[in-house]
Picture 1 (cartoon, rainbow, N blue to C red):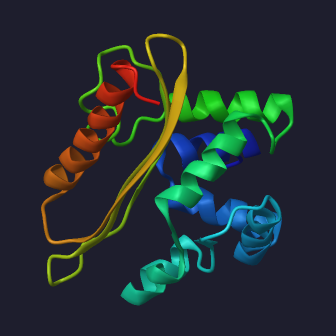
Picture 2 (picture 1 turned 60 degrees about the horizontal axis):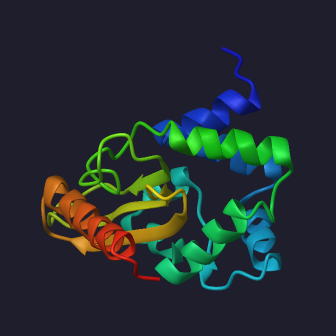
Length: 185
């Protein structure tokens, strides 16, 4: 089977294909290259050390890849202002994020139907103690007035079921939405 890079990116972003993620890491030279690229953008508090394959070998390896909501929002803003990619690559990635099929109950979960949400989800496995290390969604959301906001919500080390974690993300996003709709800045 042969896939183009655009097909691998679409599968990785829109469908959370971890195999595609690792293929892309190998192509660009590994996690350190990606980590250094993001650091050179001036975004701090993002650590990319392990591939998806490495994270699945031992539970604690996933914790070597970490970030903060603030750092993620900073990166999303740089992306949205088109400070990182070429125009064609930007348009492709933005549309791919809008077409994301995973996590419909997360950021999009409580927003009005038809709201444009360019987002990327992330999820970990659940260990034998019932702990889910990560249920995440990050994105750029279009408000009815045409303005946008960037948001990153991370639910970490949760003992709750997936639907509860997703509802937490949806409720946080809806709170931000409501605040901004009412004129908050």
